[in-house]
Image (cartoon, rainbow, N blue to C red; front, side, top):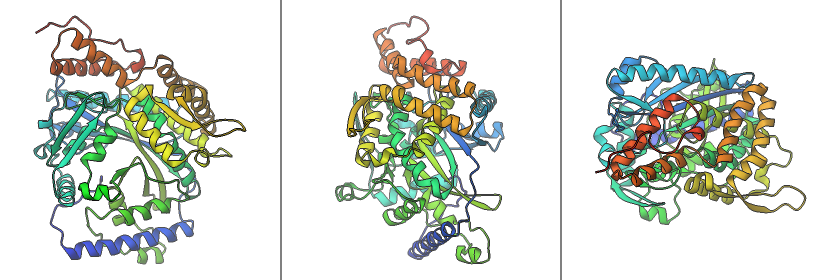
Amino acid sequence: MGEKVVAGAFDLSDRQRYRDKLRQCLTVLERLLAQQRFDRPRNLMGLEIELNLAGADGLPKMLNGEVLERIASRDFQTELAMFNLEVNIAPHRLGGRVFDRLAEELRTSLAYARRKAGEVDAGIVMIGILPTLDRDDLVSSNLSDVDRYALLNDQIVAARGEEFTLDIEGVEHLSCTSKSIVPEAACTSVQLHLQVTPGRFADVWNAAQAVTAAQIAIGANSPFLFGRELWRESRPPLFQQATDTRPPELQAQGVRPRTWFGERWISSAYELFEENLRYFPALLPICDDEDPQEVLAAGGTPKLAELVLHNGTVYRWNRPVYGIADGVPHLRVENRVLPAGPTVTDVVANAAFYYGVVRALAEESRPVWTRLPFETAAANFDAACRYGIDARLRWPRRGRLGGIAEVDAVSLVREELLPLAEAGLDAWGVEPADRDLYLGVIEERCRRRTNGASWQVATFHRALEAGLPRDAALAATTRRYAELSHRGEPAHTWPVGLPEPVPTG
């Protein structure tokens, strides 16, 4: 969805032409795969982080246009709502001191962006959901001033044909409606990209799906929405409901949601692109002038623009990506499950854990997905979102007996997944100092049973106990979070509570 699109009305012929182009693109993708035209292994990873703008009071600031104008860097882009930004880090080769380099780039970029945001009295908060967001902040008038967002909103609203229902039963219960998709903008995430060859794609995607629950359990950072304490990672249910084109009748018939975990392990990247065409009608039927079959026949590399655009409107937690670099096509797995924050160190630790464990799981002689039912992996994901670091997950037993056992998420990570992540980072050629520093952050989170979400909840309740009203407690928690986040020490070291006694009344 990063491509520029021009808003306009679509008629029946537009949709038919787009559907035809999508089928052509899929056929050409199949031929590209058969001809082995894709890039060879380059061990490349990439990173995107979505950010929030907030004032000194902790409340959201609708100023992304002004802030981006001052930042004046192509590394920073708009996101859905006017309180959102996104920073993109150039691809890095996995190996050596890659994670230290990544952390330094992020710190430099964010420090510069904070200085520029400060010129309009805004701050940058890296968090899954800004706790101070109110329903009145998430309305269509606060969409970013970019054609593609207005167009996407109009098409999803038209497809649904009625208001969106947000209904999340967590620690507390949230039930409300929205006339637009803007509540989706509350979800700010980290996207981890890994370029893979077609032959390795299925193993990497399956491994990424299997490990999503562990990622969320240790990285949860989104416990609040609209003043309610919900799931420890409330982004997934919010994102699904805020983008759901299905009215209740279609939900009851089993039509798939556009935001989904999936329903099976795969054996090729092609299967995911084909599923997207089979299950999901086009939202943005915008046709490119390219004839992909002619380009392929002439020995060129087709853009497959329609396929890429359609793929961007299906919100898988691990998304297949087709891209072109230096005239050569490549495939990426885009891991979209993690919330932003709390600090650069935490984000890089989450990335190190993911890239390490996915490499190790993808290369196991008896892969985990041959022993773990897909429905169990999906249930693990839901459990991790609900309970965060206190989740209990179901995972294949080691040894000859086999079977599935229930285990604490922290025990699974410490006893099985962290050693795998260490072996995976070694296989990438990451230096031991880098490996140990960032996997050590994950180990400490598990040992202390704390992450961004648990810190937010504990600090919020301390504020309530000190006599602050709920809204003031959320604002105070947000301000303290932003302060500690900017200092940069990982969240498991943060003291719970506010820094000084708070006045009552």
